[in-house]
Image 1 (tube, rainbow, N blue to C red):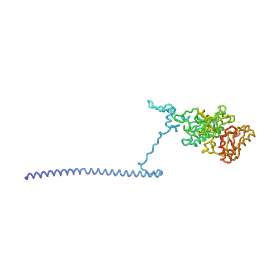
Image 2 (cartoon, rainbow, N blue to C red; image 1 turned 180 degrees about the vertical axis):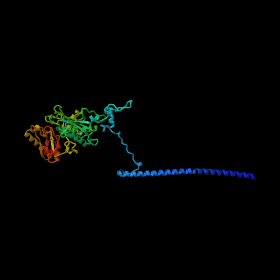
Image 3 (cartoon, one colour; image 1 turned 180 degrees about the horizontal axis):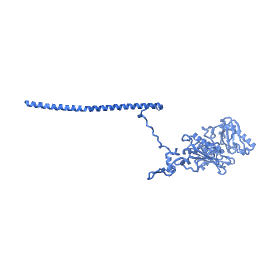
Image 4 (cartoon, rainbow, N blue to C red; image 1 turned 90 degrees about the vertical axis):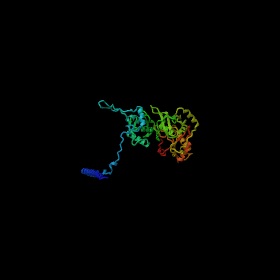
Length: 476
């Protein structure tokens, strides 16, 4: 390489080095020019962060002071909790599942059925808007309410005790509803009572339709020695989808309505002077009654000589028919048969085939349900004597000795009572014979032997008697 070429190479390298050094110097100068600006910006950001931090610390301190003051003033609210962990309040449903007034115990299906029957309007009359923007409400029409079901929530009660008050009637029925387990909610089922003292009847108003229907089971219940007659009002209209008859049977209550069924019995040939209690006493010697009705003349109130009944245990119908049909009562003979249509001939045939034999009440597994009641040492013999047969002293003594001699065959007789008629007075137990044995076992043996036997061409009917009532001479 010549000296000239070496010189050019060195010159070129020097120029490149100068350019690089110039770039570095420019970059450094630019950096120097920008550095104060960036430093000032970082300084401003740092001071801003410190100021915000001081403000947050100040706010937090103020909140702690306020919370401390509030806690001191309201110590009962001193509950430590995080605002983020507070539970949301449950939203109360004000409209869903809220029944309309008067329909608290009506199911949705029953309500729809009432609407379909036209007893409740399907839609309400809502306010309408006029072109001027004014709301116009139509004439108010009750869409729902207690008046819609009032006729189905009322019951007629006849034969009420004289002088009874509305409060006493309400307390009695509310107590019976609770005792019978017929109430559907806490509180009183009977809301109001209206009494007509002149005509001796009352109206009960219940809070629900279902409770009203169940209260029909109290028809015939005894209230202050009166058998109450419970019916639906004349303006009653059955509600669609709801039962009209009670679904329960109240033990001890004998209904005054005997529904038509194959178990309904007809009792004809009754002496007109026999009252309800006397006829029921004759019938209950075979078992407890579920329903009984002695038909009477509406004008005079006297018996027409026939009645209807139904037993709690329908299996004893044949026994009652066999034991009572053809029985001599005074100058008449009883005609007892099933009241159902077409059953008369079958019943009469069965009467001829079934002998007059009755079961032994004292030896049954459940004597309270069967005839005769609970066995006691006092036995009551019925349908053996007529009141006129007890007027003559000699004849009376013969009857007493005859009964004593026969009953002594089954045990030791302690005493005998045969109430006699007295002119102008109503003597309790006239026509009945009471025999007291020394033991219950002897009384049971006598009932087994004497029930169904003939005495003076009459079929003997027996039952047990309360010893305390017997000694008090309470022969009703």
